[in-house]
Length: 134
Image 1 (cartoon, rainbow, N blue to C red):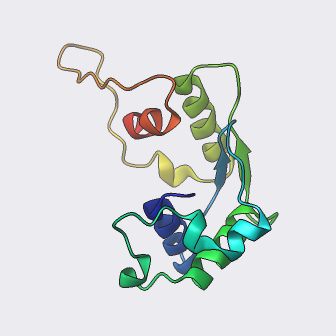
Image 2: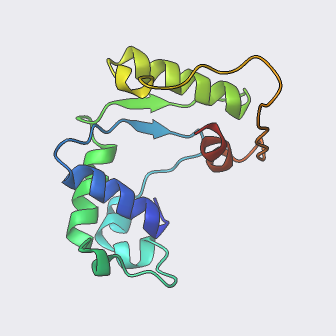
């Protein structure tokens, strides 16, 4: 949540009426303390990015972070002790169980022959694995 684009995506999701948000907690995630939420200007890495240029202000971000981390937002906790690919398969499965079938609508079948594309990512990096899994 310290990266400005993460804060922007979370805030935009909660400002969008039709967005359905589910929190996914990585095993090493530490939520911001109340003091950090009060001082988002130092909590969020501001290098070269000003979210207010996108009409995303500290009060909006603070409210969105509280909603994201609050009891009203469904939460999935990532498994520990297994590979990132197994973790993301489990997350996808859990999302589909939560009545979110739109995640699988329109996806083409995976071909079982030559012509596949290989995407390589660092297995220990959850963010890289998530991007590769998309």
